[in-house]
Image (cartoon, rainbow, N blue to C red; front, top):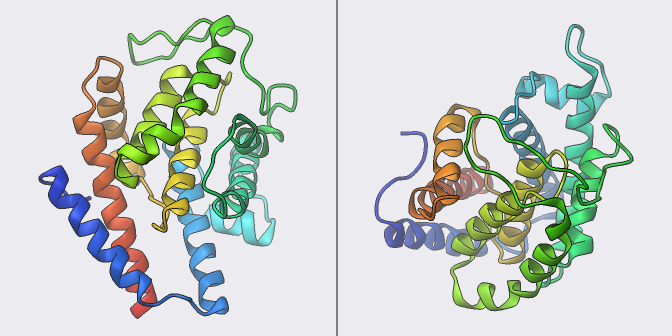
Length: 252
């Protein structure tokens, strides 16, 4: 079993139990906290990029980020994606000190991830139509994106109040992917946004391993047809596994 499965309500209870145990260790020693952040930086950067086809292994991702070493035979773009995602990861922790999320925050997360790849498109809403391979879903027309994003952000406080933080995180992920505001990097922007919500609520970041790529994409595609439950349960399941790993490292 690659992630916790079962009844959604039960999974959320298990996650909150783990969070309660994690909270007993707060405030976490500064040196240990730094180590935890670095551990999850590599894991989250590797997995989020791998889900999109990046060829770097987890060890190679670590070497690129921590040592600045180029991996022979691997595309330059893969290196740039690792460095960019690592930079966006740092921003998550600065933004997590607040309880609001703005359009500027979302654009900046995308900009940091993407500016090494295409500076002209980084952090800017797309101006052209996009077609997503492997699905019959058609993202909204580019001229509708500013209004859709404004509504998306304006609705966040009410949705945050009405939903469990993990369900809220999954909701933001799928809604941002549906709007598809950027020319590229929407999946990674959505996973960054999802993890910002988790951090703001005191949960560890959630990592979606590449081995779950097919199930992740299949359940995400179902959300475009109004079936949210499988995706929500997958996100809750990986949140549980990430929280379990965080606690293991704390208590190990």
